[in-house]
Image 1 (cartoon, one colour):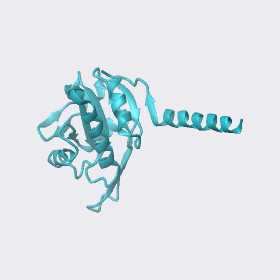
Image 2: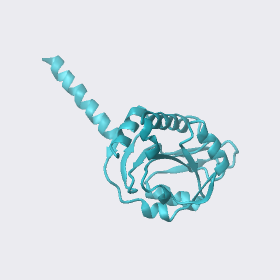
Image 3: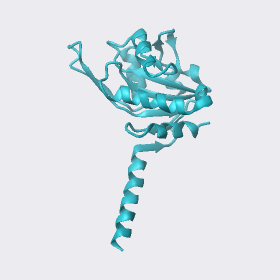
Image 4: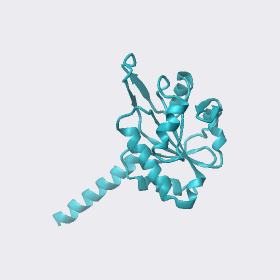
Length: 188
């Protein structure tokens, strides 16, 4: 009898844990945020994310000098994209750097290439980074930015945006990459 009760408690906790670590809901259309903010990438100096309408976007905020969360999350995103097989070309993973002082279009292209060719690294100036992070209700802070080796504190959520530019899923860091793959597949 006690084993059954304990099993139910463990199962309930597991369901609760998954519910707080993956959120599935529709946010407002992000087209306005994407239209009013321009980014730089290695091949484009005035990139608007509306360019990717029609593709599923996997969006992550971070920075190239990040010692831990960014490389592991980008690796998970890369694995998730690879797991999609032939459907991978229907998805555009985007890494937005919030380190507007150090990260350049060229350095981001080099950094994201370590995780596969499909991840697009982009950045902008402080004004645009503040706009886009405010819209996504995410945060960042440059810590001790007077030092050349400063760290950037940042949120680590992954946003799944459908082909109509509506956020459909927010995935917390630390879940297996298969959860990212599942979230993407629900948008096909």
